Length: 412
Image 1 (spheres, rainbow, N blue to C red):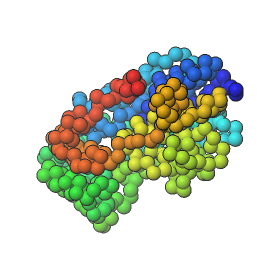
Image 2 (cartoon, rainbow, N blue to C red):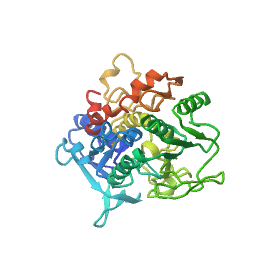
Image 3 (cartoon, rainbow, N blue to C red):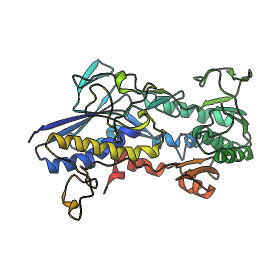
Image 4 (tube, rainbow, N blue to C red):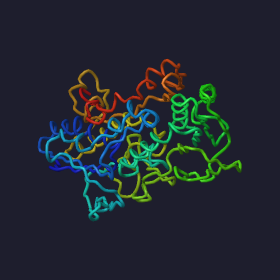
């Protein structure tokens, strides 16, 4: 039987996907591996330029309500999140991955002091995407996002005109939040296409438009920014219809602009800057990509939703568990092996069995202020009271602590 007494996992990316996976591996996958293979030792290195987790889901509420969604609530220390684990199991490197040496199985990380080569046995790509505005994603230091939110806390109450670019879920939520909180402000929402929420059913977009208009929001369809990377401080805002706007507050909510994969070998990408996978279990395709996995927004075909991340986490962790087991001679098998299948430690119900990817499909909740919203659950329209209860009341902030601490995986 082959053996490898130590296994080093490097996870690049320290927000939703990376933090979620690190906790799952430390709480579930590696304890199961240690039980099956007592000689195994392991260590996880998390690489990210940020020191704090950002619960970006709550940003639309945070910009209008500094009490309910305070920065203290939505930004959480990674050091505090992982101090619960024994010394020697986890380490956070504050830095940016700038290259992979696939043949040597090293990640090159740029830190404030120098460049480091960090060796891996398994590598997880969880580097995510970056939006134009730091309101919606981390721009390295979390203080940039926190500062952008604080600027709006001062600017919005005094604003008479607000211009929001982007008619996806974030833009629609932001328009609803501001119009509900500041009913005297003239809020305009730009959509580059002919309707709102273009990734959803037309009926949902039409309902969202009706709700926003009832709140006093002006909708400008088929109108885009001339400069799609325009952000706060750009004046005037030039639009595709030839007009120039000078709002008191401008918010760019047009979504991710950068897929954070420039540090990866080109053979690992799909030609559109996303990571290509070779199977349904998020193993990466490409030269030298053995024991390399991808999770979250970087994955080719990802819908870039938080709902996907939980399902991906379980699948990626199981892939890592299966592949490490093979090093020790384990032979994972399908779960349907009759009445005694529960005795086999490699069934899909075991922490060491391969688990498929089963996200909650066609599900999204989009509040527009605390009392209205649209959405769909498993493809069926979500009623307003469902939206209010599920997300509108508290913007899912009750999930922050169990997510950051890993307690969400307790008992799984």
